[in-house]
Length: 315
View 1: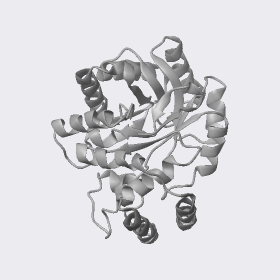
View 2: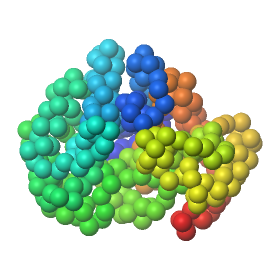
View 3: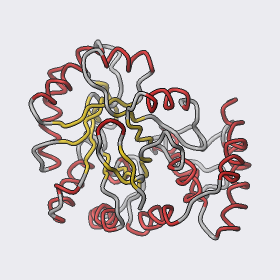
């Protein structure tokens, strides 16, 4: 495993952050409780010290899996836990909830789910259009003063929204979507990194499209997150992504590695990315992802992938 400092937090985090949206279960493939807990434990065994979760991931179920796994391993002091606020999952739907009252309550629920008395990194999941950003972020600042969270951040914010948030709270971490198939926020990510804000990117494998598993258009249930949240599994993006995968296949064949590891290395080798979030619900997938850090892409390979992925910015 490779490690980087998470911006001005000063925390040393693994460059792979284990994402738990899938582990939460809702809208993803079904796995047993034992497999999900094993995925978390295996990640830690392979050097991952950074886990990202959220109360919106199946109504707190993902947080509970994380809490149970860390309790079983008895290693809370060695783990960096990131969770979120301002978004909830109720009866199959997501709702923004950025009021101070709601966030204070969400934090208490997350602490119970995670079986801990503090959260290392606490992020506003999405800005709530019905609540002023200042109120939302003031709640986070209050939690920091109370010692319930150590570091504050935001996810899915624009530059203007980050600047507004910074007037109320020291924003130390930013969580944007970023991958070979989604580079639209690259300028914003560079801007945050230059301000010493740690960047933990999500969607590193494009919801699974960058694993190379999906080579033909498939029909997914409307509730499946591969089509509910990500646009890659349908046209017009599907075809150009298949062309990008051909170039990744060539690199993979030369190096004898799966394309998922190429996607991971491309993201984590960017100087402005502190850690990339990758979800996996089984120990086998976690191990394959962790092996991404046994090798690195050459600069020529990175340049090629940069060039080939630029076409996706035109859609």
